[in-house]
Image (cartoon, rainbow, N blue to C red; front, side, top):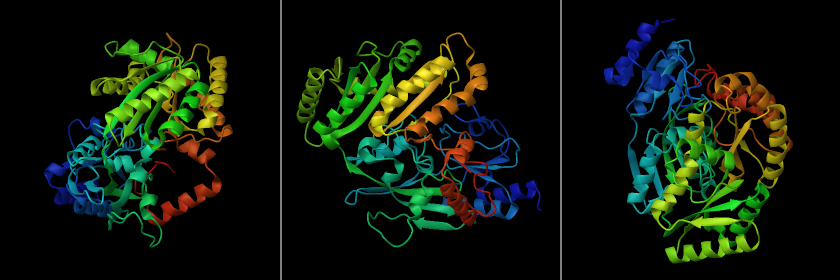
Length: 470
């Protein structure tokens, strides 16, 4: 076996001094966003293009070095953090951020994997087009990471997950070969759809280096409103009403409980909350292809019908883009407020929308009975059935201590209830390190067998993001 020094020297020959970091403060790469996982990398490789990625992967295969791909390092399950051995190479795609092409007639855009999501949105907007993937971390997360984790976000209801917005991929396989599948085709039945195999694989099968993305015409108008509901049943009824009246124009439907918005009010008092705190607040967005007047009329009709039916008790419609952004800022500030409050037990779960009220009522009751004073911070994408059902320590209880003592028991209660209601314990965050045991215990054994067979076939040495997912 050749030495680490020889391996690093070979990497320098490929990447140059600027492309390889071995010394200094590397914590921004080695620690995850939640500060839950912290590792130590052998080095940080920062390739400038796909050819350099392929050369790095070939060296890792030759030297037997584990490779951890990383985009914007905004993940929530420890999927891009090296372990503590100091023997894994962290591959950062942060230098690969070129917009390669925009085909307006085909409604596609091809970009490097290191492109920041917001930059992709802006590049599309400059052409009068829309790339609809939208996340709270869009100012720092990257397209490669979005696709590797099959990110969701706030507009899945209308446009789908990252998987649904990807038409083609370029990637480097575990043996350093480059697969160019950057197709802008919407129909291509020529064998297995490898794109879907690699989207959501969390870097365990190869390294995504570029993608061809699906674009849409920009809506003529986007209108936002907040609505107060007395129960989750009412919020679900509002969703049904909104879908029946607005159809495909309904592009966002977020729900926030009183505890979550209370934390925002506590830690960010400067943020204006247009409605008084109610048990549940819904954020709705309509994206209209006709006009502002048409969108406003549709919203007015919808909210009047909801008030008459007793589905909502109050509502506020944004009168400007600034007010709309302020409403979305409330929703996006909930994770930040939770972080200020202290560590918490996070759950990213998916359920049939019809089952959500029953799940929440039963699980809330159980958790409050077992852990007196516990605070349930419940918010998320009700429109597509994805809740961030988080458990915060009781007031005055050290958050870190509560997490270390009770996380396993809390997860057991929550995930058992999710399974009983026909749901999934991971909706959009992925598996990473955090949920490996849950995957092994809860995934269908036949599915796990097929997943391991795919992993063994494409990465027989087990060097691609080792210790993640499987």
